[in-house]
Length: 161
Image (cartoon, rainbow, N blue to C red; front, top):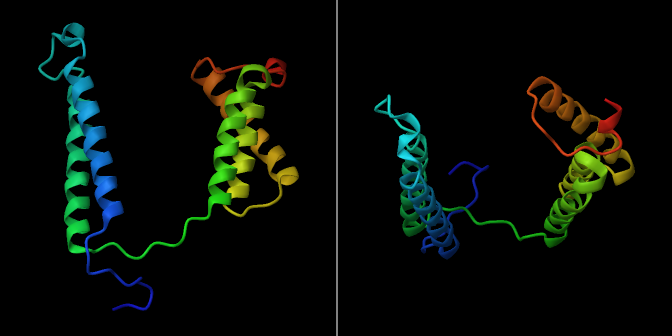
């Protein structure tokens, strides 16, 4: 065994079965949605609008089967303990972005999300990462809104451009 690999358990991994169930459920939802797509969208071709979603559903099913097989064999390495304060920073960033999008705009809201996520991963303090996130988000805003003509939420910063 390589010194970099974590030891594997010899018993079935219950958490992996939950992940596999989630993958199967997601595959089912994607396949169900693909089955209900409007078939008249592309009648000129044998490959319709549902081909790609069916491929995604098949890939998710294959991932689920692989996860079940690995869970039965107990091939998953031991996981580190969950650090809830890190998850809290990321969830807080998502909530802040949702709240800020309506009046602060895309750049500021996404910059705050960037900073909170960086803090959750052990990054620099918020006063240092919020400006970096806003600048990066403003660049993304300009690429998407001006270059691709996509409509993103505008705030005071976006109205300058």
